[in-house]
Amino acid sequence: MYCRERVRPWGSRASLIVHLAPAARKNPLLAIFALESEWETLSRPGRSPEIAPQRFTWWADELRHLAAGSPTHPVTRLWAGLDLLETVTPTRLETALEGFFATRAIFNPPGSLRESGLRILGESRGFFLEASLLGSGPEIPGETFTATALADWMATSGLSGAQPDTETLIRRARLALATGAAGLAAVRSAPSALPLRVTFALTRLHLDVADLALQGPATRHRRTRPGIAAKLWTAWKAARD
Image (tube, rainbow, N blue to C red; front, side):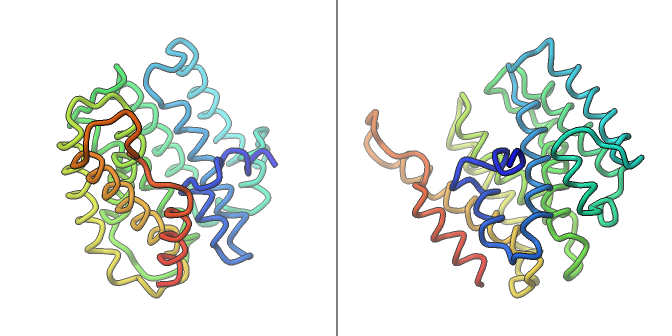
């Protein structure tokens, strides 16, 4: 139940991926995206600046407990129960955690977007996209995961922040998405690549809606984010490509 709460609200990228995944892959994907959600919450700029470093230290200790077979957190207990460390090494988990902590510092204050942090951001979030293949499927270049994850962050978390130049952010996100598309084309029929395909499609949808909002009249009530129905339809189509 706890892990399901972590991938909510309904209509989020993670919730749609888990919903559309084959039954045998639902719980592993739930565990992967619940952990990403935990770390994403910690890395948000401006939130609990005194407590966040302590929480990251706690998570570093928890990863050691997971590697030793004695995790204490609900998410890592699910990881242990599903033997996910057979496809994802503890070292890569530690590197991803370090990336989330680094981007928390890089993107403070809220709304800042420093070039030095974009690579780290893409790699740390891209780790979870790569892990979502669960060690199966065709070889996919690492840059595909990094670029797609970066575009997804820009199109969701980035556009919801106090960015000074939305047009520039959208343009950067589209460039990153184009890089991700190069590796995606070869795996459209691979069942294990469903999370990657859905992420790519939803990111493009977010950017299209943001573009329309920029082009429309400047009113308080203009829609700047896609609705749940549009996201569900887009994810469903991507899952069946």
